[in-house]
Amino acid sequence: MAYPSPPKLNLPVDPYEVGGYHFRDRVRRKILLWATHLGDDVQAVVGTEVKAIGDGEVVWSEIRPGSEKKKNWGGLVVVGHNNDQLDGAGFQTFYSVYGHLMNLRVNTGDFVIGGQTLGVVAERLTPENGWWEIAHLHFGIYCGPWRDVVLPGYKRIEEFRTKTKWWQDPCSFIEQYNSN
Image (tube, rainbow, N blue to C red; front, side, top):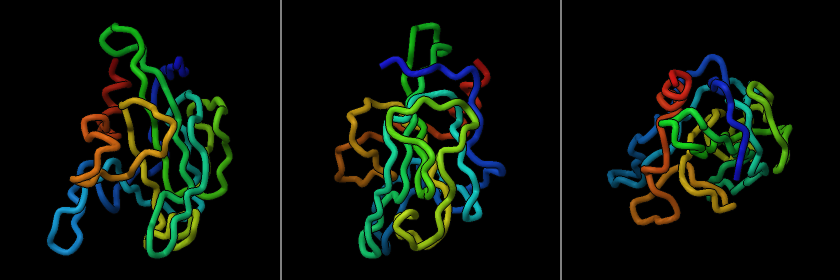
């Protein structure tokens, strides 16, 4: 798929302060290693506009509410981008992932430009937030194959639907992208 190739990337919210899990933090339940976090949990006030990091095509936009007992993404938007600047070897596809949003302003199939509002940070303990205790933005960069299925926010040890090597540290990825 040939998605747009943004000339530069920006962070999805300002300020960008990780207040929960960082990319690749170990998520523990009790004393056992439970999963590896696949993005940054960014502190943001409820209603903060979340913007596309660059030009792209929306490949996923829906509310995945979960329940109080089984948390989920809430409002989730995934945008496909191409990077024709890396290594001079043609296009590399990557996806920006934005979770825990309400008031989604884009639909699957829409083309977006960098800085366009995708939705806003949802209130805590709501279906749009996915029933998480804290209002925040989950932001990730995924560089694996797009299979038209929802992406996970973490990788459990026994889970095989994603690989940690397909995920990138969001801030480092954006910095490297903009330096090429």
